[in-house]
Image (cartoon, rainbow, N blue to C red; front, side, top):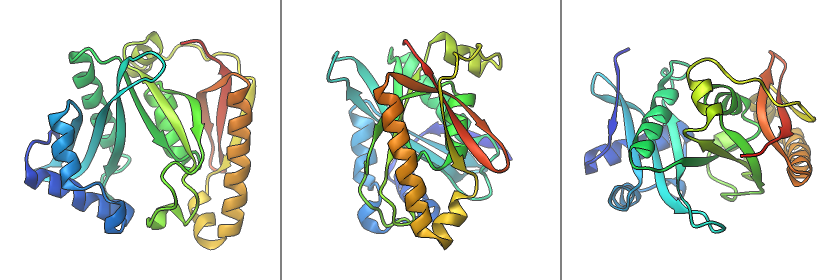
Length: 245
């Protein structure tokens, strides 16, 4: 692979990103981020990057500028990142996230946030153990029930990742020398075969989701944060600790 990551700037590139959304998630048109969003995103200070293999787009990400209600601080909300089949597990997602980070820091933006499905533990592990993000917020049914078969008709309960771009934790993680973990005070386990369960036993998948969501809300309300993740062939485990940013 000869992967190149670059900013998206033209209508044709935005259309390729729309096509990838439909290819990756199987969205109906109502759930697709349209070309218009990419156009506006670039004009208002957001981000849109594509990953290319010999000129073919194989991944993309898009982020919108945002303001924290409590402090007025500027950050970026990374709304979507996707990598097409055949290019996953090849570092393409990491390349896209690092491009987002480099661009944000060059403009004095200290924070990027995004949401992810807590049942998709591969993404959780990447966020915590490869990027150094933490989770302190959890939202029930964030996007509503979507048309994507990957979501299995379940509510879109989501963790909110906080990526403090220049923090010691993040810098150490990206350098391959992670800092010692804070003491673990609680754990949540998610089965590794959740995709199969979603497909073959949606009732059980909903029970697992409800249990995971209830535990997340309980632990986060108690002042804990997700600061680590462990995985095995059978399950993934979220690690909760006290966290002071």
